[in-house]
Amino acid sequence: MAKGVTPKSVDYSKWYTDVIQRAELADYGPVKGTMVIRPYGYGIWENMKAAFDLRFKQTGHVNAYFPLFIPKSFLSREAQHVEGFAKECAVVTHSRLMASPDGRGVVVDPESKLEEEIIVRPTSETVIWAQYKKWIKSYRDLPLLINQWANVVRWEMRTRLFLRTSEFLWQEGHTAHATEAEAREEARRMLEVYREVAEDVLAIPVLTGSKSESERFAGAVDTLCIEAMMGDKKALQAGTSHYLGQNFARAFDVKFQNEKNEEELVYATSWGVSTRLVGAVIMTHGDDKGLRLPPRLAPIQVVILPIIRSDEDDAQVKAYLKTTLEKLESAGVRVHLDDRKKISAGFKFNEWEMKGVPLRMEVGPRDMANQKVFMARRDTGEKFALEIDSAAEKIVELLTEIQENLYRQARQFREANTFRAKDYGEFKELIESGGFIKCGWDGTPETEAAIKEETKATIRLIPFDSDPAGKVCIYSGRPAKYEVIFARAY
Image 1 (spheres, rainbow, N blue to C red):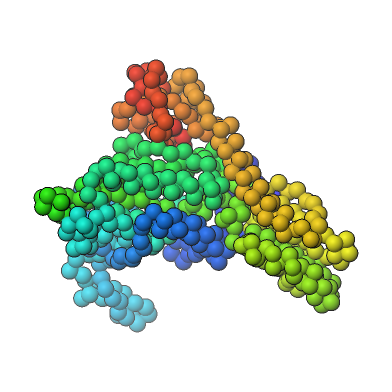
Image 2: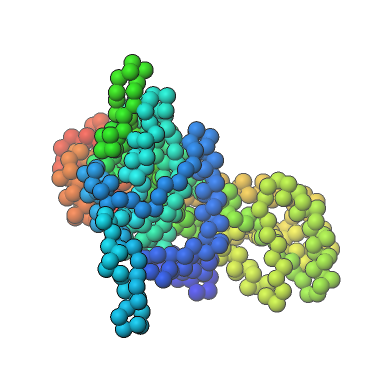
């Protein structure tokens, strides 16, 4: 256990917060429920962002930016949408402040009351579709494939760093299509992008499928999702992709002339992931010593710690590593040389272990005399020496091994904690110990609500490969309409 970090087995929630603060990922903001993302945490987000953005552009999407402020009347145009977000909206009612009558502070200027109240963006469907009405006239304007990287505000009552904050960073894609088939294909395509980044970059195994009607995005016809299992066996919704049908096109009267010169409503999708994925990485891979970062995500993949006693030692180490550093940098490896003075080697070891850097290299006079470097893997804790002449090539191989090992460990953990319940009594016992439960569901909202009320477990998804044939509902005993995954979730 790292100094100052609560063990996972003692208090998982406290462990999570301790790691975030000790690893310098984030801190609490001055307004309740907000967070400050510190440089190291933001570096992790930037690497996630780059991985997603590359794939968005490869699939034909372009980035744009839409206003933070949304007229209140816009939200009321789509009934399910406003109902879904009404309790989370931050509302601007006045435009300025004035000195208080006692001269000791400021108050809202009553004469600055807005004619129409403004919503601080909880999501951008409404403001974007108001613009799409101006931009879409003909089938030649479709498909319209736009993404934006932005912040949103959802006034959460119970917050947790990265996982649920009143303001967070995310991307939101909003696309318009000529046909239902094209829009549904887009929603599946973007879910596959999310799955690929989660598994190949973040090393988080995910399940893919659809949400039940009660768990859908407000205003969606169908919500697709990736779901991950965290280290405490709870589920985390890691990304969603929505087929919106013609709901927003109808609400904002967005029509196009088809090739037969007939007027039609367009079909829509929206999809998003957020900084909660940073929390997912912490909880999937972290241990009692802190973070363990997948190499493809880590801001620093290799940290080098010179063991030096004098300026002469320092110069010799840097000369010794010159060729190795050049090889690593030419291979695209992100390397950091920690040559800070007056800080003990032990302190540095603990600091970089806490920050989850995949590989640590130590080099001192003895290593140079033996033409070696000393290495430590963060994923396994294994320590070993490498020949200096082949170190760069071996490090590139090790980073691939670490990436694959973290994914394998997480997948094995999920598989070991995924169960089938033979009856509702066993279901309730399994839910108490945590994990995913695969079982039959009769498809009724009444059954879903009853299970949630009694166990606090929800349907996380209906897997795409769901096979209800021959199964019965775990609760009602009626023939199953779907095979689903239940779990308690963040």
